Image 1 (cartoon, each protein chain N blue to C red):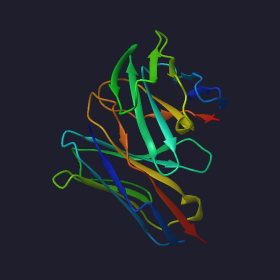
Image 2 (cartoon, chains in turn blue, red):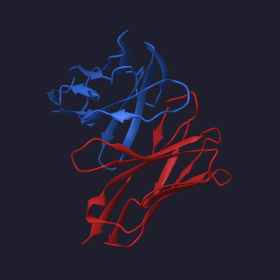
Image 3 (cartoon, chains in turn brown, green):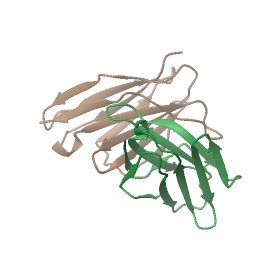
Image 4 (tube, helix red, strand yellow):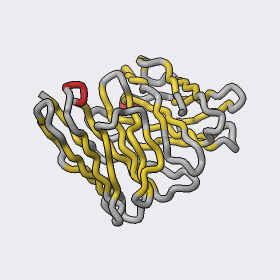
Amino acid sequence: KAGVTQTPRYLIKTRGQQVTLSCSPISGHRSVSWYQQTPGQGLQFLFEYFSETQRNKGNFPGRFSGRQFSNSRSEMNVSTLELGDSALYLCASSLRGSLNTEAFFGQGTRLTVV
Amino acid sequence: GENVEQHPSTLSVQEGDSAVIKCTYSDSASNYFPWYKQELGKRPQLIIDIRSNVGEKKDQRIAVTLNKTAKHFSLHITETQPEDSAVYFCAASRTNNNDMRFGAGTRLTVKP
């Protein structure tokens, strides 16, 4: 069974540009969450999607957005990139929306904004 | 929303000693508390989790305790080994809600 796949693995963008990151969950998993990981800040929750709907949202500005497709694959978009957006972006998928189940993480996309 | 605090931020122990990491949470409705281990350059992986209907859970050298009244939970690793060296994250969330919030992490170093 394939794990959670994130693409691309590495990305370098210029300040002001926008970027789209992709996450393919484990087959059958319907919930996808996104996290930003920076040194010293741990894992900051961005948002969670379930059945193509955003159910939860963290405290990030509107420049951060996402969506989920009917096959549960999810994308995250960051517009007007800032230097502070440089981070490892992790997505995690879990089996179902009710009764918490283990979240499986992808390898992450390391975004560098220059 | 939920706020999870984790202590200590770094922990160094001698091989064979025990390690304890503590977390507190703010949302009394949280009832699922997983712990993740992240080795350098790798993805976080679940090592143990506990739900609010139990006070303690053990899996070999790893145990987690939960005090719902005080809203804190702890990870205990006994007989530590160098391969236990990693960053450990605690998290909390509610049933029917995958809004899982993580602590800031604890960097554990086990010295041989």
